[in-house]
Image (cartoon, rainbow, N blue to C red):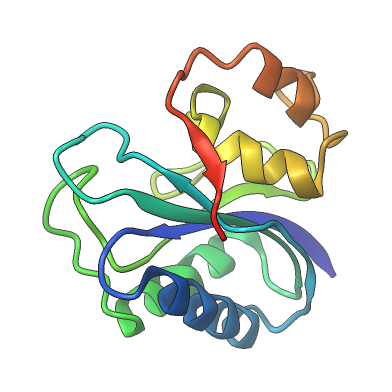
Length: 161
């Protein structure tokens, strides 16, 4: 089995329910198990800031699929959950990103792993650090905790209750 770290998030509709539905859909699509999940975190929108705040959550899952197949299944899950790709960094019901896949470094037309901007985004690193603080970025050779400590992003990321 492969181990993948995902970040899920959304800022439209019932955000908590959408994330719960996404977790269920991800596990069904990935053909594996949920190994760990972070708390929910709320963050102001990044990039296009004129939109509602996001809820985000990091997941560690096992999957029998390759990274490329997992990506296809995650894109299908987004679509099934109502994701419409209208604008870059725009509002969305759900977003599912593959952050890490085993310790692989992947550069294809459709997929880059580790996620190419994860180290610049506090909303990715904070929930990821909760479930995998000592996980080492295979390119940058720093742990998630070390990346969070030097992250240039100053957006507040707060636990959601």
